[in-house]
Length: 150
Length: 396
Ligand SMILES: Cc1ncc(COP(=O)(O)O)c(C=O)c1O
Image 1 (tube, each protein chain N blue to C red):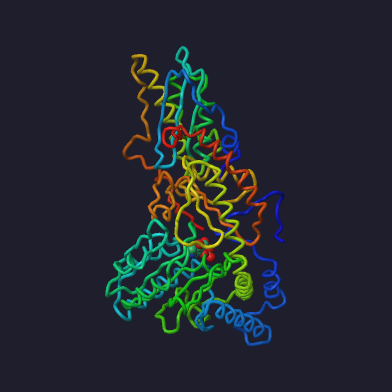
Image 2: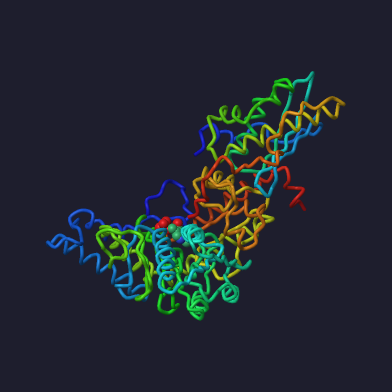
């Protein structure tokens, strides 16, 4: 079951949308798996001044997208890229084990957007490892639950 | 009739149903004053025994069986497990048949014991339903072998509601000397179903899908069907299912079925009309939507796809407006896979994630449908506006 904070962010997600003149864009996920996230960022003096997201996905996917925009805003690029899936989950008061992969989507989306900004400006990407692009990443690994058909 | 919260709308009757007050009235005395063990010899026990046996007779008459052919079980899942394992193992022992066939969109209560058998000495063939949501007899024939012990195909599917051509499927199995089981948990009471007319050897039923309590099942085993019990002990239920019988549950089951059958024709008409309003309202009122399964369906069942929306999100948003439905999407229930039923009928995974199962029942009203059709479109619109791919994938 979802925590109250997850439901809060799911029902009233913060920073939904697209920044039209974004400095960096990150898009991760796959509709076949049921979740896709797009993050657009504004950067000033190596700090994130604005972030917006669009997400197709379950309640946890939307809530983790929403909370990471709040967590990252105002942070330096380096600090923002180091936000972990566990920190995202903790900030939401925890996620069910089967939903932990949703926070990976949020942290990866942000890293891709930051590296997009850096490479556009001829700088070295931070190259923080993307969990979801690892061929061995198995979003199913953390759950052994079966579909509970009724 | 049912106690309902303000503006709460229940549209998940395929998942479970509220116990009808007429059923509660019938069962309550067997929890209180007539609490006896039906296997005891004194009066209290004999009263319970008579109630149990008259429930058995009544259910048997309702499904076209002999009373001795019905075994009370703990739930639909137990009936399915017992049929698959109990029949296959005995048939293997007696006739050295070691092959079983099930359809790809069975409930997991059938699929998992079939997979267990496949790991324990049996060959398993899985037959796919076609895109219409129906298992075609020709496809089953192609899967049968001379050593097929048991075929199991459900009477109607729990997610898309499609009704299966049971008589033809059972005949195909019998032609090759195989036995035929059907999971009739969803079909029971909603459409005419008679075990001798369709010619099945075994069938599973569950009370909580027909306005009876949870935890009461029945297994029909045609006389002479090879069977090894799963539960061993005191030898109750003709030695086929040990354990003191749930007398109140059996009485409730009988009452629930009696009501279903008495109201079947009228309810079928009423629920089909309500379902048509739901389907028409969604397909006409919301772009990029479609209906799953074109075959004949149980009255009141609709499985709809809203392209570009994720099922769990829709479910949670509908819930926040007091509407309960279910979804075949990945993220719905602790599982990350889209529904095996939708995949089996050829629905692409990215579309299956956008499925909503709406199932109507005895207490559904026109106002409930109005409310659903009023609340759903803005939810779909909002989720689509948050989907970064919606315009690209489905835009005009
Ligand atoms: C088709 C089908 N078979 C079996 C079951 C399991 O029945 P029960 O919940 O009584 O174990 C269900 C419902 O959950 C079902 O829909």
